[in-house]
Length: 47
Image: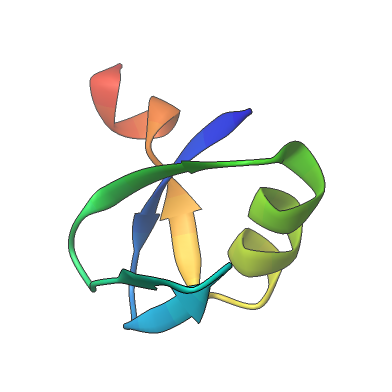
C-alpha cells in the first residue's frame, strides 16, 4: 500500500477521494495515478 495526495476528486471502490487529501491505495493504482498526474506521492512530502 502507498499513500497518495489527490490532485483531483475521484471515486475509488465506491469511496469518494477528494482533492488535497491523503489516501492509501495499492501500489499499482498509486503508480498509475502518479503517472497520470491524478495524484502525487505523499511520502515525498515528509522529506
